[in-house]
Image 1 (cartoon, rainbow, N blue to C red):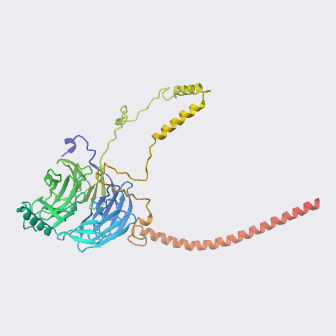
Image 2: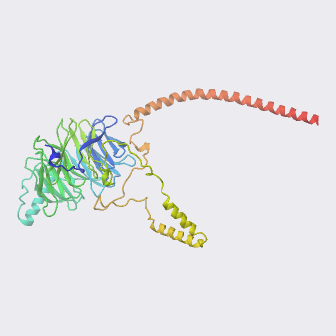
Image 3: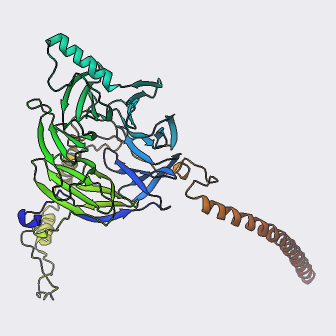
Length: 516
């Protein structure tokens, strides 16, 4: 199906081609990725045997941080709101809170079961939500008090049913009185006011964060499907749910039609499962990555339901897909661990800047007119006449007019503050914190592992430099001994020459006295 024939207008806000790709220097496979709020940094979690975390500068395409702690595959990465901290979770059951400024570990936790997903609270960096392997309850963790609260979905739903039955006398039709669901996914809302649980029965439960009670439970799919992922749009108008029945569902979060099904997205040709889903930066598109071993396919739909683009990458499976938070850029990770960056195609239109500009298909020889570039001195002659007429007048008036001009220019100048970051209202509608930017990178904090540790990326270079330095020290001792002998001989020669010069001077003085 040729989408260009269906829609002749080119979509400039949708990625189309792979512009470049990022590869780990040690050829370790990447498994997951996450942008910070401004999209300037990209954190990538690697697969086993070394579950390290790489932080890429997305503008310079260079690694600015390398973090080592996990021994298993890194499954989840979450940024704090101010971008100063990073939360990583691994398949070995370890959860680590990093300080990116110094590459130090602020908090670490070891659990028995693998951690599939972990994220910060959107408004409180001291809280995080942990989703474990299927069959175990999600955990709400407080970093300061080290308090762990298990969120048992079954007990929460039974208390919700009893509360509704006591208040209205009727059990809600969407809730099964014999509920036996198991939580398979959990996520905070966009502002952290609620926690959404997806279970193995195709249901979504909404937990109020303040009261820790369930407000609502509604059915998304059939009872034998499990909810795999829940994503929210930036404007908090829609919720995207991925389930095991190979369908992506768009659910409304507006007050007029709250929790109503708006659209369903699926691949009607291949009928494959979806590996990852999400929203675009402008909340107008939905992206879904296909779960296949040999197909790297990314589908982009509009919120209205039409298919906008089908991106086909290399003949490799897809692991993760994320959309840039501010720009029309998609980052996808393949089975081989290569990070592909998809961007939109922008065609330069110079006629929009100059209406008389003509674009030429070939270079042409330009014939210059005889007086085309000659200097025109008419304006300079008029200025010279005015200056000659002012000769002999009171010079104070001339100084006064110049001073008035200077005063006017000083009034027009505006004070520019370069020390503080102003709030950008176009990017967010809520309160903003000061942006966190890396200063000049210090080599000590590029990695949290010392140079003499074999896990460090510069370990081999460090060993070579160490061997070269030991060899140079031995040669330097020999050269120093030789240089000392040479310096003594040169100093003796200087002393002899100085004595000869003094003796010659004395002889000349004595001869001059005798002549007198």
